[in-house]
Image (cartoon, rainbow over all chains, first blue to last red; front, side, top):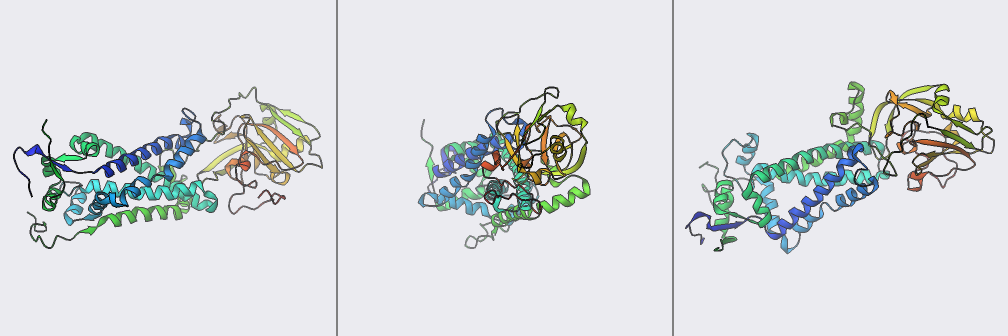
Length: 219
Length: 242
Protein backbone atom coordinates (compact mmCIF):
# COMPACT_ATOMS: atom_id res chain seq x y z
CA UNK A 1 0.00 0.00 0.00
CA UNK A 2 2.80 2.29 0.83
CA UNK A 3 4.66 1.84 -2.39
CA UNK A 4 6.19 4.98 -3.65
CA UNK A 5 7.09 5.20 -7.29
CA UNK A 6 10.17 7.32 -7.30
CA UNK A 7 12.84 5.56 -9.37
CA UNK A 8 11.28 2.21 -10.21
CA UNK A 9 14.09 -0.01 -9.06
CA UNK A 10 14.04 1.18 -5.50
CA UNK A 11 11.70 -1.56 -4.33
CA UNK A 12 12.69 -5.04 -3.48
CA UNK A 13 10.28 -7.93 -3.21
CA UNK A 14 11.05 -11.00 -1.22
CA UNK A 15 10.71 -13.95 -3.62
CA UNK A 16 12.32 -16.68 -1.53
CA UNK A 17 12.75 -16.50 2.22
CA UNK A 18 15.71 -18.01 4.08
CA UNK A 19 13.97 -21.32 4.65
CA UNK A 20 13.16 -21.69 0.96
CA UNK A 21 16.67 -20.78 -0.11
CA UNK A 22 18.17 -23.25 2.35
CA UNK A 23 15.74 -25.96 1.21
CA UNK A 24 16.52 -25.29 -2.44
CA UNK A 25 20.28 -25.53 -2.00
CA UNK A 26 20.09 -28.56 0.27
CA UNK A 27 17.86 -30.23 -2.30
CA UNK A 28 20.15 -29.21 -5.15
CA UNK A 29 23.20 -30.56 -3.34
CA UNK A 30 21.53 -33.91 -2.77
CA UNK A 31 20.42 -34.05 -6.41
CA UNK A 32 23.95 -33.29 -7.59
CA UNK A 33 25.49 -36.00 -5.43
CA UNK A 34 22.88 -38.46 -6.68
CA UNK A 35 23.37 -37.54 -10.32
CA UNK A 36 27.13 -37.57 -9.99
CA UNK A 37 27.18 -41.00 -8.34
CA UNK A 38 24.52 -42.33 -10.73
CA UNK A 39 26.80 -42.01 -13.74
CA UNK A 40 29.39 -44.64 -12.73
CA UNK A 41 26.66 -46.89 -11.32
CA UNK A 42 24.81 -46.79 -14.64
CA UNK A 43 27.71 -46.81 -17.07
CA UNK A 44 29.86 -49.54 -15.57
CA UNK A 45 32.96 -48.60 -17.53
CA UNK A 46 33.35 -45.29 -15.68
CA UNK A 47 33.55 -47.01 -12.38
CA UNK A 48 36.71 -47.38 -10.39
CA UNK A 49 38.06 -44.13 -11.72
CA UNK A 50 37.43 -42.09 -8.61
CA UNK A 51 36.02 -44.22 -5.84
CA UNK A 52 35.39 -47.93 -5.37
CA UNK A 53 31.95 -48.96 -6.51
CA UNK A 54 30.87 -50.06 -3.06
CA UNK A 55 31.53 -46.59 -1.68
CA UNK A 56 29.71 -44.91 -4.57
CA UNK A 57 26.73 -47.18 -3.92
CA UNK A 58 26.66 -46.26 -0.24
CA UNK A 59 26.84 -42.54 -1.01
CA UNK A 60 24.06 -42.88 -3.59
CA UNK A 61 21.92 -44.89 -1.17
CA UNK A 62 22.17 -42.57 1.83
CA UNK A 63 21.86 -39.41 -0.23
CA UNK A 64 18.80 -40.90 -1.89
CA UNK A 65 17.21 -41.82 1.41
CA UNK A 66 17.61 -38.26 2.70
CA UNK A 67 16.44 -36.68 -0.55
CA UNK A 68 12.95 -35.75 0.65
CA UNK A 69 14.15 -34.26 3.94
CA UNK A 70 14.94 -30.64 2.92
CA UNK A 71 11.54 -30.17 1.31
CA UNK A 72 9.63 -31.89 4.10
CA UNK A 73 11.45 -29.99 6.84
CA UNK A 74 10.92 -26.68 5.04
CA UNK A 75 7.20 -27.37 4.69
CA UNK A 76 6.28 -28.29 8.25
CA UNK A 77 6.56 -26.06 11.27
CA UNK A 78 6.10 -22.37 11.81
CA UNK A 79 9.05 -21.54 9.53
CA UNK A 80 7.32 -23.07 6.50
CA UNK A 81 4.67 -20.41 5.80
CA UNK A 82 6.24 -19.09 2.62
CA UNK A 83 7.05 -22.58 1.41
CA UNK A 84 3.48 -23.76 1.93
CA UNK A 85 2.15 -20.68 0.17
CA UNK A 86 4.36 -21.35 -2.82
CA UNK A 87 3.34 -24.99 -2.98
CA UNK A 88 -0.26 -23.79 -3.24
CA UNK A 89 0.73 -21.36 -5.98
CA UNK A 90 2.50 -24.14 -7.84
CA UNK A 91 -0.46 -26.50 -7.52
CA UNK A 92 -3.31 -24.20 -8.51
CA UNK A 93 -3.41 -23.08 -12.13
CA UNK A 94 -5.69 -20.71 -14.00
CA UNK A 95 -7.04 -21.58 -17.42
CA UNK A 96 -4.68 -18.99 -18.88
CA UNK A 97 -1.74 -20.82 -17.40
CA UNK A 98 -2.85 -24.17 -18.84
CA UNK A 99 -3.28 -22.50 -22.22
CA UNK A 100 0.16 -20.89 -21.92
CA UNK A 101 1.76 -24.29 -21.37
CA UNK A 102 -0.23 -25.87 -24.21
CA UNK A 103 0.94 -23.16 -26.60
CA UNK A 104 4.53 -23.49 -25.36
CA UNK A 105 4.57 -20.05 -23.82
CA UNK A 106 3.22 -18.13 -26.80
CA UNK A 107 -0.19 -17.19 -25.45
CA UNK A 108 -0.56 -14.04 -23.39
CA UNK A 109 -0.21 -14.50 -19.67
CA UNK A 110 0.08 -12.29 -16.66
CA UNK A 111 2.26 -14.67 -14.76
CA UNK A 112 1.91 -15.80 -11.20
CA UNK A 113 4.97 -15.82 -8.95
CA UNK A 114 6.12 -18.74 -11.10
CA UNK A 115 5.30 -19.26 -14.73
CA UNK A 116 3.66 -22.55 -15.78
CA UNK A 117 6.96 -23.97 -16.98
CA UNK A 118 8.54 -23.34 -13.58
CA UNK A 119 5.51 -24.83 -11.88
CA UNK A 120 5.69 -27.94 -14.03
CA UNK A 121 9.40 -28.27 -13.22
CA UNK A 122 8.66 -28.14 -9.50
CA UNK A 123 5.82 -30.66 -9.73
CA UNK A 124 7.94 -33.05 -11.79
CA UNK A 125 10.83 -32.84 -9.37
CA UNK A 126 8.45 -33.43 -6.45
CA UNK A 127 6.92 -36.49 -8.09
CA UNK A 128 10.26 -37.84 -9.21
CA UNK A 129 11.61 -37.65 -5.66
CA UNK A 130 8.79 -39.96 -4.58
CA UNK A 131 9.19 -42.30 -7.57
CA UNK A 132 12.98 -42.50 -7.23
CA UNK A 133 12.73 -43.05 -3.48
CA UNK A 134 10.27 -45.93 -3.89
CA UNK A 135 11.97 -47.63 -6.85
CA UNK A 136 15.41 -47.06 -5.36
CA UNK A 137 14.32 -48.66 -2.09
CA UNK A 138 12.95 -51.61 -4.06
CA UNK A 139 16.36 -52.09 -5.64
CA UNK A 140 18.13 -51.82 -2.30
CA UNK A 141 15.78 -54.09 -0.36
CA UNK A 142 15.04 -56.31 -3.34
CA UNK A 143 14.42 -59.46 -1.31
CA UNK A 144 10.87 -58.38 -0.58
CA UNK A 145 9.94 -58.10 -4.25
CA UNK A 146 9.63 -60.55 -7.11
CA UNK A 147 12.17 -60.35 -9.91
CA UNK A 148 9.47 -59.04 -12.22
CA UNK A 149 8.87 -56.09 -9.88
CA UNK A 150 12.62 -55.51 -9.49
CA UNK A 151 13.02 -55.37 -13.25
CA UNK A 152 10.12 -52.94 -13.45
CA UNK A 153 11.64 -50.83 -10.68
CA UNK A 154 14.99 -50.79 -12.49
CA UNK A 155 13.32 -49.68 -15.69
CA UNK A 156 11.36 -46.89 -13.96
CA UNK A 157 14.41 -45.76 -11.95
CA UNK A 158 16.41 -45.56 -15.21
CA UNK A 159 13.74 -43.74 -17.23
CA UNK A 160 13.11 -41.20 -14.46
CA UNK A 161 16.86 -40.74 -14.03
CA UNK A 162 17.18 -39.78 -17.68
CA UNK A 163 14.22 -37.42 -17.38
CA UNK A 164 15.71 -35.83 -14.24
CA UNK A 165 19.03 -35.23 -15.99
CA UNK A 166 17.25 -33.49 -18.87
CA UNK A 167 15.00 -31.41 -16.58
CA UNK A 168 17.81 -30.40 -14.20
CA UNK A 169 20.10 -29.39 -17.06
CA UNK A 170 17.21 -27.37 -18.53
CA UNK A 171 16.61 -25.77 -15.11
CA UNK A 172 20.27 -24.75 -14.84
CA UNK A 173 20.34 -23.36 -18.39
CA UNK A 174 17.24 -21.28 -17.67
CA UNK A 175 18.72 -20.11 -14.37
CA UNK A 176 22.04 -18.88 -15.71
CA UNK A 177 20.35 -17.13 -18.63
CA UNK A 178 17.93 -15.26 -16.33
CA UNK A 179 20.22 -13.43 -13.97
CA UNK A 180 17.74 -11.55 -11.83
CA UNK A 181 15.65 -14.65 -11.18
CA UNK A 182 18.87 -16.47 -10.39
CA UNK A 183 19.88 -13.81 -7.90
CA UNK A 184 16.64 -14.32 -5.99
CA UNK A 185 17.57 -17.93 -5.11
CA UNK A 186 20.83 -16.60 -3.67
CA UNK A 187 19.74 -13.35 -2.05
CA UNK A 188 16.00 -13.80 -1.88
CA UNK A 189 14.76 -10.66 -3.56
CA UNK A 190 13.77 -9.36 -6.99
CA UNK A 191 13.19 -5.79 -8.08
CA UNK A 192 9.72 -4.45 -8.55
CA UNK A 193 10.40 -3.81 -12.23
CA UNK A 194 11.42 -7.45 -12.69
CA UNK A 195 8.24 -8.58 -10.97
CA UNK A 196 6.21 -6.31 -13.22
CA UNK A 197 7.72 -7.92 -16.29
CA UNK A 198 7.77 -11.55 -15.17
CA UNK A 199 5.26 -11.97 -12.36
CA UNK A 200 2.54 -9.38 -12.88
CA UNK A 201 -0.16 -11.24 -11.06
CA UNK A 202 2.08 -11.93 -8.10
CA UNK A 203 3.07 -8.27 -7.87
CA UNK A 204 -0.58 -7.24 -7.72
CA UNK A 205 -1.28 -9.75 -4.98
CA UNK A 206 1.77 -8.65 -3.05
CA UNK A 207 0.57 -5.06 -3.26
CA UNK A 208 -2.89 -6.05 -2.07
CA UNK A 209 -1.47 -7.99 0.83
CA UNK A 210 1.13 -5.34 1.53
CA UNK A 211 3.61 -8.13 2.17
CA UNK A 212 7.32 -7.85 2.53
CA UNK A 213 8.35 -4.87 0.54
CA UNK A 214 11.47 -3.14 1.57
CA UNK A 215 13.36 -0.18 0.30
CA UNK A 216 16.65 -0.71 -1.40
CA UNK A 217 19.23 0.39 1.11
CA UNK A 218 21.10 3.49 0.05
CA UNK A 219 24.63 2.83 -1.03
CA UNK B 1 -7.67 -7.40 -19.88
CA UNK B 2 -9.01 -10.89 -20.30
CA UNK B 3 -12.51 -11.37 -18.98
CA UNK B 4 -11.19 -14.02 -16.60
CA UNK B 5 -8.71 -11.70 -14.99
CA UNK B 6 -9.07 -11.21 -11.24
CA UNK B 7 -9.76 -7.51 -11.67
CA UNK B 8 -13.05 -8.21 -13.35
CA UNK B 9 -14.55 -9.58 -10.18
CA UNK B 10 -12.24 -8.90 -7.30
CA UNK B 11 -14.44 -10.71 -4.80
CA UNK B 12 -14.69 -13.90 -6.83
CA UNK B 13 -11.26 -14.78 -8.14
CA UNK B 14 -11.21 -16.85 -11.28
CA UNK B 15 -11.42 -20.56 -11.00
CA UNK B 16 -8.15 -22.29 -10.15
CA UNK B 17 -7.51 -25.89 -11.07
CA UNK B 18 -5.33 -28.14 -8.97
CA UNK B 19 -3.00 -29.07 -11.80
CA UNK B 20 -0.24 -29.84 -9.34
CA UNK B 21 -2.04 -32.73 -7.76
CA UNK B 22 -3.05 -34.19 -11.12
CA UNK B 23 0.39 -34.00 -12.64
CA UNK B 24 2.03 -35.28 -9.45
CA UNK B 25 -0.35 -38.24 -9.33
CA UNK B 26 0.11 -38.76 -13.07
CA UNK B 27 3.87 -39.17 -12.74
CA UNK B 28 3.45 -41.36 -9.66
CA UNK B 29 0.93 -43.62 -11.39
CA UNK B 30 3.21 -43.81 -14.42
CA UNK B 31 6.01 -44.96 -12.14
CA UNK B 32 3.79 -47.52 -10.42
CA UNK B 33 2.58 -48.90 -13.76
CA UNK B 34 6.18 -49.13 -14.91
CA UNK B 35 7.13 -51.11 -11.83
CA UNK B 36 4.12 -53.41 -12.15
CA UNK B 37 4.11 -53.99 -15.90
CA UNK B 38 7.50 -52.80 -17.10
CA UNK B 39 8.88 -56.29 -17.00
CA UNK B 40 6.09 -57.83 -19.11
CA UNK B 41 6.18 -54.87 -21.49
CA UNK B 42 9.91 -55.44 -21.88
CA UNK B 43 9.37 -59.14 -22.54
CA UNK B 44 6.75 -58.45 -25.20
CA UNK B 45 8.84 -55.78 -26.87
CA UNK B 46 11.86 -58.03 -26.58
CA UNK B 47 10.04 -60.82 -28.41
CA UNK B 48 8.75 -58.50 -31.12
CA UNK B 49 11.74 -56.24 -31.71
CA UNK B 50 14.57 -58.27 -30.23
CA UNK B 51 15.38 -55.60 -27.68
CA UNK B 52 13.53 -54.48 -24.59
CA UNK B 53 12.13 -51.13 -23.61
CA UNK B 54 15.33 -50.46 -21.72
CA UNK B 55 17.10 -50.76 -25.07
CA UNK B 56 15.58 -47.42 -25.98
CA UNK B 57 17.53 -45.78 -23.18
CA UNK B 58 21.19 -45.21 -23.95
CA UNK B 59 22.98 -47.89 -22.01
CA UNK B 60 19.72 -49.25 -20.64
CA UNK B 61 20.03 -52.87 -21.69
CA UNK B 62 23.72 -53.05 -21.09
CA UNK B 63 25.46 -54.92 -18.37
CA UNK B 64 26.10 -52.97 -15.21
CA UNK B 65 29.66 -53.98 -14.54
CA UNK B 66 30.35 -54.99 -10.97
CA UNK B 67 33.64 -55.81 -9.37
CA UNK B 68 34.22 -56.42 -5.70
CA UNK B 69 37.75 -55.10 -5.62
CA UNK B 70 37.19 -52.05 -7.77
CA UNK B 71 39.46 -53.24 -10.53
CA UNK B 72 39.45 -55.79 -13.30
CA UNK B 73 42.16 -58.43 -13.18
CA UNK B 74 43.84 -58.59 -16.57
CA UNK B 75 44.86 -62.08 -17.60
CA UNK B 76 46.07 -62.86 -21.10
CA UNK B 77 44.79 -65.94 -22.92
CA UNK B 78 48.30 -67.25 -22.99
CA UNK B 79 48.87 -67.00 -19.25
CA UNK B 80 45.39 -68.15 -18.27
CA UNK B 81 45.26 -71.27 -16.09
CA UNK B 82 42.27 -73.01 -14.53
CA UNK B 83 43.31 -75.09 -11.54
CA UNK B 84 40.97 -77.98 -10.77
CA UNK B 85 41.72 -79.50 -7.38
CA UNK B 86 40.28 -80.94 -4.19
CA UNK B 87 38.47 -84.24 -3.92
CA UNK B 88 39.27 -85.35 -7.45
CA UNK B 89 41.10 -88.35 -8.87
CA UNK B 90 43.26 -86.33 -11.29
CA UNK B 91 43.99 -82.74 -10.14
CA UNK B 92 44.49 -80.79 -13.34
CA UNK B 93 45.55 -77.38 -14.57
CA UNK B 94 43.77 -76.41 -17.76
CA UNK B 95 45.00 -73.86 -20.32
CA UNK B 96 42.84 -71.97 -22.81
CA UNK B 97 43.81 -74.53 -25.45
CA UNK B 98 42.78 -77.37 -23.16
CA UNK B 99 39.39 -75.79 -22.55
CA UNK B 100 38.79 -75.08 -26.21
CA UNK B 101 39.71 -78.66 -27.09
CA UNK B 102 36.95 -79.98 -24.82
CA UNK B 103 33.40 -80.56 -26.11
CA UNK B 104 31.87 -77.17 -26.81
CA UNK B 105 28.41 -76.13 -25.65
CA UNK B 106 26.58 -72.93 -26.54
CA UNK B 107 23.17 -71.39 -25.92
CA UNK B 108 21.41 -68.06 -25.73
CA UNK B 109 19.98 -67.02 -22.37
CA UNK B 110 19.15 -63.90 -20.43
CA UNK B 111 21.51 -62.55 -17.80
CA UNK B 112 19.45 -61.63 -14.76
CA UNK B 113 20.91 -59.64 -11.91
CA UNK B 114 19.48 -60.12 -8.45
CA UNK B 115 18.96 -56.36 -8.19
CA UNK B 116 16.59 -56.34 -11.15
CA UNK B 117 18.44 -55.41 -14.32
CA UNK B 118 18.58 -57.93 -17.08
CA UNK B 119 20.26 -58.32 -20.43
CA UNK B 120 18.20 -60.40 -22.81
CA UNK B 121 19.44 -62.91 -25.37
CA UNK B 122 23.06 -63.20 -24.39
CA UNK B 123 24.94 -65.81 -26.37
CA UNK B 124 27.23 -68.00 -24.28
CA UNK B 125 29.83 -70.56 -25.30
CA UNK B 126 32.10 -72.76 -23.26
CA UNK B 127 32.52 -76.12 -21.60
CA UNK B 128 29.93 -77.76 -19.40
CA UNK B 129 31.14 -77.77 -15.82
CA UNK B 130 29.93 -81.37 -15.62
CA UNK B 131 32.33 -82.32 -18.45
CA UNK B 132 35.25 -80.84 -16.53
CA UNK B 133 34.18 -82.66 -13.36
CA UNK B 134 33.93 -85.95 -15.28
CA UNK B 135 37.31 -85.23 -16.85
CA UNK B 136 39.03 -84.96 -13.44
CA UNK B 137 36.98 -87.64 -11.67
CA UNK B 138 34.99 -86.61 -8.61
CA UNK B 139 35.60 -88.69 -5.49
CA UNK B 140 32.65 -90.22 -3.59
CA UNK B 141 33.14 -88.04 -0.51
CA UNK B 142 32.61 -84.85 -2.52
CA UNK B 143 29.49 -82.76 -1.86
CA UNK B 144 30.04 -79.36 -3.39
CA UNK B 145 32.21 -77.28 -5.69
CA UNK B 146 33.90 -74.01 -4.73
CA UNK B 147 35.14 -71.45 -7.22
CA UNK B 148 37.91 -68.92 -6.96
CA UNK B 149 38.55 -65.78 -8.94
CA UNK B 150 41.66 -64.04 -10.23
CA UNK B 151 40.45 -60.98 -8.31
CA UNK B 152 41.35 -62.84 -5.07
CA UNK B 153 38.10 -61.59 -3.55
CA UNK B 154 35.10 -63.26 -5.11
CA UNK B 155 34.26 -66.85 -4.34
CA UNK B 156 31.26 -68.96 -5.23
CA UNK B 157 29.86 -72.36 -4.53
CA UNK B 158 27.45 -74.88 -5.99
CA UNK B 159 26.34 -78.28 -4.78
CA UNK B 160 27.53 -81.13 -6.98
CA UNK B 161 23.98 -81.61 -8.30
CA UNK B 162 23.77 -77.94 -9.22
CA UNK B 163 27.22 -78.00 -10.77
CA UNK B 164 26.22 -80.89 -13.03
CA UNK B 165 23.26 -79.07 -14.60
CA UNK B 166 23.68 -78.83 -18.36
CA UNK B 167 23.37 -75.02 -18.43
CA UNK B 168 26.14 -74.43 -15.91
CA UNK B 169 29.21 -73.75 -17.99
CA UNK B 170 32.77 -72.51 -17.85
CA UNK B 171 32.39 -69.81 -20.49
CA UNK B 172 35.12 -68.44 -22.74
CA UNK B 173 32.85 -66.77 -25.25
CA UNK B 174 30.01 -64.34 -24.64
CA UNK B 175 27.97 -62.14 -26.98
CA UNK B 176 29.70 -63.83 -29.92
CA UNK B 177 33.24 -62.90 -28.92
CA UNK B 178 35.82 -63.92 -26.33
CA UNK B 179 34.72 -62.87 -22.86
CA UNK B 180 36.12 -59.39 -22.27
CA UNK B 181 38.06 -58.43 -19.17
CA UNK B 182 35.22 -56.39 -17.68
CA UNK B 183 32.82 -59.30 -18.18
CA UNK B 184 35.21 -61.63 -16.38
CA UNK B 185 37.38 -62.85 -19.23
CA UNK B 186 39.15 -64.74 -20.49
CA UNK B 187 37.14 -67.37 -18.61
CA UNK B 188 34.18 -66.99 -16.30
CA UNK B 189 31.45 -69.12 -14.84
CA UNK B 190 27.91 -68.88 -16.21
CA UNK B 191 25.19 -70.42 -14.05
CA UNK B 192 22.15 -69.92 -16.26
CA UNK B 193 19.35 -70.89 -13.83
CA UNK B 194 20.61 -68.60 -11.09
CA UNK B 195 21.11 -64.89 -10.50
CA UNK B 196 24.15 -63.18 -11.94
CA UNK B 197 26.15 -63.10 -8.73
CA UNK B 198 26.53 -66.90 -8.99
CA UNK B 199 28.30 -66.49 -12.35
CA UNK B 200 31.74 -65.76 -10.93
CA UNK B 201 34.07 -63.72 -13.09
CA UNK B 202 37.79 -64.26 -13.81
CA UNK B 203 37.53 -67.93 -12.85
CA UNK B 204 40.88 -69.18 -11.55
CA UNK B 205 40.11 -72.30 -9.61
CA UNK B 206 37.58 -75.09 -9.20
CA UNK B 207 37.82 -76.96 -5.91
CA UNK B 208 35.75 -80.06 -5.24
CA UNK B 209 34.99 -80.08 -1.51
CA UNK B 210 33.05 -81.99 1.12
CA UNK B 211 30.73 -79.18 2.20
CA UNK B 212 29.16 -76.05 0.75
CA UNK B 213 31.36 -73.02 1.39
CA UNK B 214 29.19 -69.93 1.04
CA UNK B 215 30.80 -67.51 -1.42
CA UNK B 216 31.47 -63.81 -1.16
CA UNK B 217 27.92 -62.66 -1.98
CA UNK B 218 26.36 -65.34 0.22
CA UNK B 219 28.47 -64.11 3.13
CA UNK B 220 27.02 -60.70 2.35
CA UNK B 221 23.44 -61.86 2.61
CA UNK B 222 22.51 -63.26 -0.78
CA UNK B 223 20.86 -66.71 -0.93
CA UNK B 224 23.31 -69.57 -1.41
CA UNK B 225 20.79 -71.16 -3.78
CA UNK B 226 20.47 -68.25 -6.18
CA UNK B 227 17.63 -69.70 -8.25
CA UNK B 228 15.85 -67.32 -10.53
CA UNK B 229 12.16 -66.94 -9.71
CA UNK B 230 10.15 -69.81 -11.08
CA UNK B 231 13.20 -72.01 -11.52
CA UNK B 232 13.40 -75.24 -9.63
CA UNK B 233 16.36 -77.45 -9.21
CA UNK B 234 18.41 -79.35 -6.72
CA UNK B 235 18.43 -77.31 -3.56
CA UNK B 236 21.12 -76.97 -1.03
CA UNK B 237 20.58 -79.72 1.55
CA UNK B 238 21.76 -77.55 4.42
CA UNK B 239 18.70 -75.67 5.75
CA UNK B 240 20.97 -73.04 7.22
CA UNK B 241 21.98 -72.05 3.70
CA UNK B 242 18.77 -71.05 2.03
